[in-house]
Length: 88
Image 1 (tube, rainbow, N blue to C red):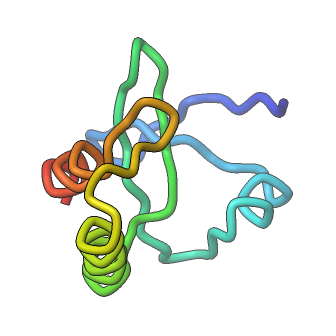
Image 2 (image 1 turned 180 degrees about the horizontal axis):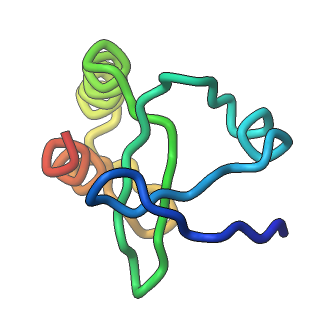
């Protein structure tokens, strides 16, 4: 794990990512990221494009049609689709 210091960029706070962290996450200058707080932890990950979300939704719909009762570790595909829609 690498430590960074919170800085300021205008009126917003900023985190400088070490090069090895950015590289490992596939981030480059100008890349869009999604930020959230989950259980008190800041989570930053590469933003998904509309096409990626659409492709994932179509794949999930195809699986649902083929196997309507399929469950993944106790999470139903319908739940995953609904969660994806809320996050889109």
